[in-house]
Length: 60
Image 1 (spheres, rainbow, N blue to C red):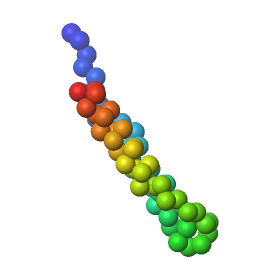
Image 2: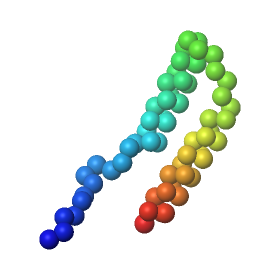
Image 3: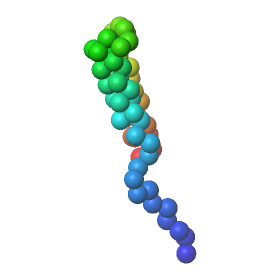
């Protein structure tokens, strides 16, 4: 009898980690701990989201 491998919890939470890093950078910038001017952050999030959607449909 063949064993069926089931994934209980999904894969690595890439989008959550990216949001966490962006949030930490944003907070540190607002608190004047670091000075970061990143106008391209929305584009990075859009590109990552498109890549995640593409990979999701490619596997199906």
